[in-house]
Image (cartoon, rainbow, N blue to C red):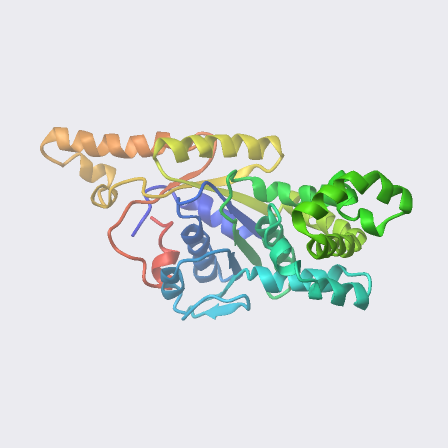
Length: 346
């Protein structure tokens, strides 16, 4: 399998980046692209690479030559470099986060034992996004790795992941949190919250409401350490060595979203480094060079092939403004680490 474009932008990116975030709408091949970049960095650039995935398909683990992906890094066998892959485990990640940010053992133990802890933490809006970035920072600061690549979680909006740190930080100062913890605050606050609490108690029941109030009160105790951590995450996202790769397909919807992503990243001062257009060219057309196209007969067939390739190029975020890799569609399954490494090659 091969991509029909000059590979220099890919290799330049893999040789210099310390962190790569793969962004794009769902269903366009972000996870495969993350694995392909990681494999290429390890095999062709002799880098120690960690790829973090959120919800990988089993066939990806098979292509990497491992039985399954887990939270602990799995060493993927390669002849050159070192390549590790892991999957985010939400429950264990939240446990680690609580242990890191709890001000003392009592708050830590009470929070972990709260009946609603597991359900509420894994259902926070952008919970997956924040946990993914928290993992990214941990691994990026680990001397074991030269490059960390993260396959961003599926989201309604592809850049929700970048907003996760600030939104989690804002939650600690929100009016909602004040109301939810009213029963643990001053008597004046309790009186002001009484109408709300009375209605909530009738709807939810006393014990359930008590568990909710206790959970959010305990959770609020994590604020100082948690807010400090979010600032570390935000600095990493803005670092010069953190790069962004947009993934799309040629269809109108994903192509439009990719245009919007490129503009939004630029507005946030996160200049995208590369666009990968998956399933851009039919496999049969991708294998024919421009020189070979001149020899194709009849001429209408050659013209149709050329039009397909040009349409794929113009459907991207723009080769004139952003280096673009066109990855052909193929009926074959990528079943090896070498196949992944060559996915973005000539």
